[in-house]
Amino acid sequence: MLKIAIVGTGAIASNHIKAIEANDKLKLVALCDLNEERVKALAEQRGVPYFLNYKDIPEAVECDAVILNLPHGLHASASIYFLEAGLHVLVEKPMANTVEECDAMNEAAEKSGKKLAIAHVQRYMAVNRKIKEIIDSGELGRLCMYNEQRSINYFLPSRAPWFTSKKMAGGGIVMNYGAHAFDRLCYTASCSPVEVIGACDNFINDRDVEGHAQMMAKCDNGVSATITFSGYSTVDYIIYYYFTGGALRVVGTSTVEIKKEGERAWSPVAVDMSTDPFILELEDFRKFTNDEPTEIPDYAYSRRIIEAIQKGYGEI
Image (cartoon, rainbow, N blue to C red; front, top):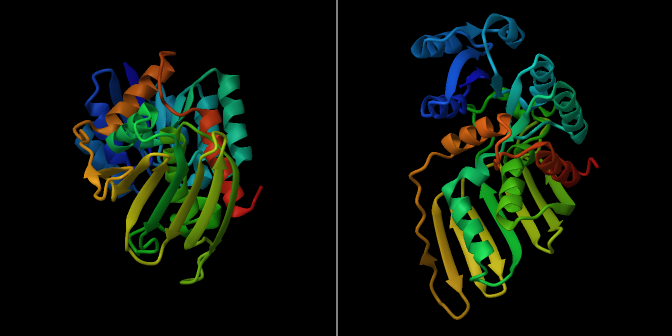
C-alpha cells in the first residue's frame, strides 16, 4: 500500500484523488493547500487530515509519497524538501522552470534514494496511445512533420494569477501548454528535440509572460515540428502528423482522423476512451516506487522538455 499526500488542491487534484481511490494499492493520507476553506472541505469529504504548510506533513502523518500540484516556481524547492525527508515525489508538469532546477531535483533524488517522477499525462491518454500505435505500425510510411495549432483565451479571470507571473510560472502559454506539446511529440514520435527556435510576445496586457508564440523544432530522428500558440481568443485546437504515405490529424482532444495517399476524405479512427489516464499514471507511479517496469516520465525525459522550452524562449 502506497500512502500518498497531495500538496495543492486546485483543479488537477480531483483527478489524482479519484485515481487514488480507484486503486486498492494506493491510499490518500493527507491534503495540503494555502486555501484553508477549500482544503478543509475536501479533507473532511475524504476523511483525511489537512495542512496549510507542506513542511508539517512528514512528521505528522505516515506517508510514503507526495503528489505536488504547485506553481511551477515551487516545484524544485518542494520536491527537494520531500525527497530529503525520505518520500517519493510525483510532481506535475512542467518539471521546473529551468534545467538547473531539474538538475537540483535529480541530485536530491539520487542522494535520498527516493523516486522522482513527473506527471506528463499525455502518454496515458487514449488518443495519443492510438497515434503512437499508428506511427509505430508504419501504415502511413515514415513520419516527417508535426504541426500543432492551439488558440485559447489564456488570460481569462478564472485562471489562477500565478500562471501569468514569470517568477511563479516560468513563462506563459509556452511553459504551460508547450510542456504538453513537446511531451506529446516526444512520446508519440519516439524522439527528442535537438534544435529549437522560437518567437513570442504579449500584445494584449502588461503581464510579464507571453500570450502568443511560435516554435520550430528538429528532432533526433529527423522529424521536424512547428508549434503555434495564440492566447487571446478561443478559435481552434488541431494537430497534424505528416507521413510519407499520408497524414493524421487530431481535432480538439478526442477526434482522430486519417488520410492515406490517394484518398480525398478524412476517415475517423476509433479510439477507446474508457480508461482514465490518471488511473494509469498513478498505477505507473506506484510501480516506479516499487522498482517495477513503468512508463512514468523520469528526470532525464522531463529535463529534455524544459530544455526544449528554454531554447524556444531563447534562454539557452
